Amino acid sequence: MEDAIRRAIEFQAKKLLKREEKKRFAKRKYQRRYKLRTGMPATVGAYRYPRVWDISPHFDPRYCISHSKYLARVIWLKIRNRSYKPAAAVRYQIAQDSGGFREIMVFSVPDAAVANLFYRKLRDKNRNLFSPFSYAYMKDRGLFDAVIQLRSYLVGGKKYVIQFDFAKYFDSIDHKYIEHLFNRTNFNVSDTEKYLIREFLKHPISDAKDYAFDSAEKRLTGVPQGSSLSLFLANMAGHELDRRLESTNGQFVRFADDIVAITNSHDDALNVLKSFDDHCRYSGIAINHEKSPGISILESAVKSEKRTFFLNDGDGNEIDEIGDFDYIGHKFLPDKIMLSTRGMKRTRRRVAKIIYLHLLYTLKKFKRFDLSRVRGQHFDWDLVTCVNEVRKFIYGGLKQSEIMSFVSGDGRLGKMRGFIGFCPLMDSIEQFRELDGWLLDVIRRALTERYRLIHNMRKAKAKAKGTKLKILRKSVPSKKALIAGSWYNGPAKLTLELGAPSFVLAWRAARKKYKQYGLDDFEDPKYYSHASSFPSISGLYET
Image (cartoon, rainbow, N blue to C red; front, side):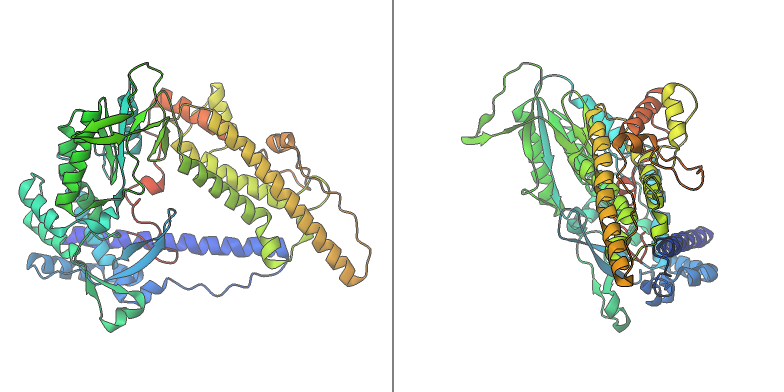
């Protein structure tokens, strides 16, 4: 075990160093791009490693690699004599898309390594004990399996959909409830693992600015978001709810704290609701009723009685009729699956950011620009790089020529990452056509604003020099030219693909690969992976 801890420390430290090197590479890339676009060197400060590394040597991966043998020996000795305690975790607040903030704990490298090591062990030896309808943080099933299962539940007549959102799920789990689970469930957890879990549950917490003053507070409730052990504990905390839902007349899928249940009758839906209420009363978790749809009727083409008002023990209850619902990035309709509303917004926001950074950011932020990057009517080097980055996001690093060849019946495709890797189970082409049209429109709008800013910049420059403004004939490429890549007529022939990427083409390739080869080559997005509950922290590191 001592050697396993040493390897875990070195693995964790190297992972952090690799992540930091990627940030340094991105910074150097930005500096080169800034100089090319403005003709001036980027005025950025010297590289500085993350501040959290200064808090303690155990937060510095370089120190931990060089002292890994000693750290492993001491940690294993302390675990054996029950004196091991995690160092105080550094607390940070991260803004959430839905508003508000989420507290994230950054543990020292050795503590994070110990948590990772024991999490993998607990997950693997208990994988057959968890409910088959629990899909998050599992080695043998994941997001796409949950989507396939849920879709199968919607076949047939009238369906009742029950959805509840938990309020701060990770932060609310009662420690007494976890102790109860140790005693009441048959999970395979050794005494040493129980000891470690208890120590991580009550770990000390400190803000970065107060760390040196030894003023840490102790966690009293919830599981730490930032420790791998929390992934096992989150599934463990939902286990009794899984068993209760399995005993009801209906079906459900659970992905971490996201649960949707399907029943054929209103009475069965009420039994599911009671299971949620009982679970919350025992576990300390609360339902966020403001964000919870509750019980709804899913519209169906199958003709059946559609009663939307019910009497239960003398109380009246109205139920909304819905045409669709969102779950883990997918929109479910009675007869098809689409990209969720939030997924559409996330995709547009990501692509819009790429376009803004390449075409408008330098002009608006720094008010200077190297005009040699835009010459004649059909040359704009930044549009070349913009289209290439958008293609990377949509195709996940695959070439358009490879995708077109595969769709037409030739060739093979490797791993499906990025946006293309999230499309295999979606049935409808309409959203992807809409995204293709939106992409061309937003590029052309950005180019219109770009050329207006460039013209004004050239005009101001000529006025300052007292010279006559030279005419720069620059027009925004048509949609057809953007698609074909014929807008480019630069000074050199490029090996890059110049045509705008297509969401429809990505979807068609993903669907074909799924139909022919299954899901083995599809990669879940990072925000639905094992670390999905722990957003990245700029300048820090995640567990």
